[in-house]
Length: 433
Image 1 (tube, one colour):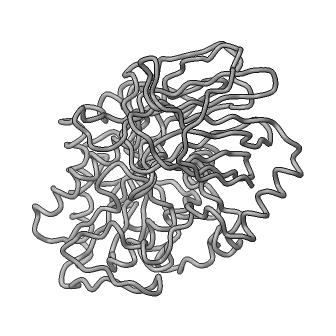
Image 2 (image 1 turned 180 degrees about the vertical axis):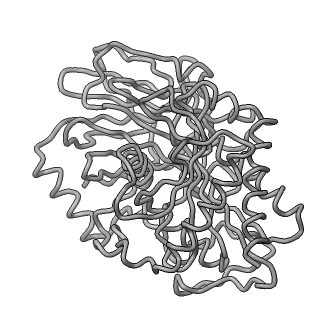
């Protein structure tokens, strides 16, 4: 494991081969890419470009940035990844980034992702085709009309050396930026309620006179979710969650909270913890996936099951459960009991209640909106594995289908769908009384 923390000047290595301008993305296979809007008057450092070059056996990764920053670099196994941590930055990359393509060789880098990770931390994750080490990393001063440049040189190494370096990092505990400590587990609770620090089972005291609903906008930050090539799932889910919260609160019968209120990354396990800390009566995770069959469209609702109801359900669950890995988190340090929360931890009654809710919601929603024919489905989604909070995952539609994408990307039609889902939840709670 190579760990670097530098804030230095350096001289640009004589890099003889071409430096390829990619403006933030590579496509060698399938690649999800995403961009952030930037305020021209931002007080944060601004990343304006990312370039990649190759020279013999070395690969160079260059980040153009408006001002000098501190940075940390470390490696992760399974799969091989190199993580670059920066302070909070704005991303101001070209608007046509999603259409960029390159036929050039990009050395050992297969693809990369970037975005907001958590408070005070932005992250770039490089997926590499083989084990590698960082041979050089340095920050260059502006010259020749260029901005500051963070330069990272990579070179392939033997797998044993790579894994040995990972083990060394674990033993020394160095650069453990990917771990979220207990005193941060509540960092997105609303400011009007003072967080309680302590055991993860510590709960925020909320009146139980009316039902508490926690809405979870899927993905966020460095994890964009699915894309249609024009929009990202993480933006759709957040916008829909805000509309749904607004509508439910307008009914005056519920307390409603969001797991995230901005474009930020949250670990899957933490999403469940937030619901439990709010003593939620219901946890609703919103998604809008993309699948291979572009003809499939319509809403569906998932509840927890060890066995997926069909092949497509299993595929979607597998993709969603990779969220932590996508964000460059080291899951190898967690025990199997933590990393793979067993299905039998979920109380049978909680699962039954979730299924009853899904059944009622599907019956109500299909009166007003298109659903799949088998709209109540089952799969092992990680966010549904709370042992004591009834939980459902709603696929609002498919970004891979042009008609669904049009509905979800249009503010008016998306708000209408969010209200329909909210009304279905309201109908269920009133019926249960």
